[in-house]
Length: 446
Ligand SMILES: Cc1ncc(COP(=O)(O)O)c(C=O)c1O
Image (cartoon, rainbow, N blue to C red; front, top):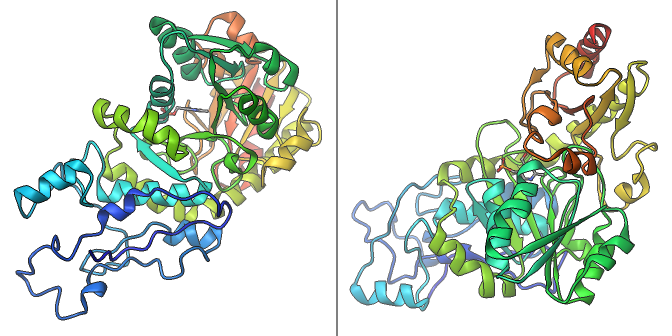
């Protein structure tokens, strides 16, 4: 068999063998499409379907973001191809049988995997330093799939209480239907994590930074607690993105993403990613994903794959802008609290600096006067949009209590730190002087 693809391992975790589906994209010589057009020419067979990965294991993060996982077709396109197909043709019935047995590389059906999706997964795996990546239709599909695939009746989850509303819904309302329980703890209280562990605890869950209060959880410490009890720690890395934080470096066992956010970065397409070790894939995830089908569209995967190429540049600017806005808000009389992980007044500032490469693109703040003042401020904005999304080039303001966290009980909202005057600002890539002028004007009205 001849494979035209060389899988890369990002040197961060050289001990973790990567199980990449990208190799499935490589056609065997026997399986190479018949060249009816002559486009394949007389190039040596190995060059007909070469990937661009020429220095396996040697690339740095920024190069990986641009080139990791790329596989070129026989056309040698420079831009990763967007391949739309539901199914795949086999040269012979024996080949179909071998592919279903897992004995022959190649795709079977796009619910299971497809070329563009596999490229996105491979690039994400390399960026996160993870052995496995699987892309899903949304971030919530990723979160839900990990819980449903990883748990059974009688199991128990421990989760930080500062959570996005939908994550909390899954833990509080979906899992109990299957006899799975969850204990919520204050994420920064390591004793509370340890005390909540039970023999049947299988998964621990944190968002760090959390939505919307930007609480930071000590990934290494919580991973150790999980490990000591034979459980796995899941980190939702949507707010940081792999450009700012790679939880597996700190011992996280599973990472989930809403790639809808900073990975897409331009508010265009939904997507999610699960990153894990091979044992979780084999024992829990693989058959679950194949058979339940939370698959991402190749188009969305292609957008997110291409977006990864500019992720680090965008995140750098998001961080710079967000810090400037946070400092500006910190000087405003009507602002009673500013939360930004890289500001010294953030309660977990040192921890944030230890496990993140930047404070992120979101600033959360509280205005005097509760909901009426928050609404007045939002309605007075002339540049920043009111939206419940985040991670866009455009600055977006959210009132979590009445939108993203509305369906939570008042107690759960309080535990998550969501108050009536709290506003979450996803700081975009506009000029910060324009953003400050807009906020200054709106604060006068609030
Ligand atoms: C921390 C976090 N996790 C998961 C999600 C869900 O992602 P999606 O909207 O792509 O389903 C969100 C969405 O805002 C989020 O903020």
